[in-house]
Length: 85
Image (cartoon, rainbow, N blue to C red; front, top):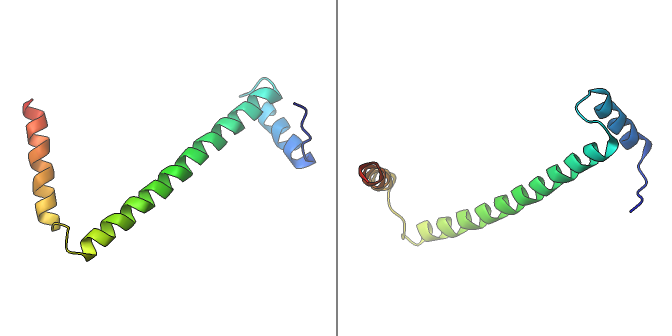
């Protein structure tokens, strides 16, 4: 698949090659694509987290939540059980 790079993109690749970290342009492009994939995964995670926060906030507004002290005590109890196992 042939691609056309902008001059500044070509320069960036050359700069990366000059560092010695990469042996060819394909390695630079491959890492860039891996980072793009990770960013897309991160963006989905952030969106899912935002949805969970919205749900939790709505539950709290309806009085369905528990106070912070109770939550901490429950977490400590679960941790204690796991340590005993």
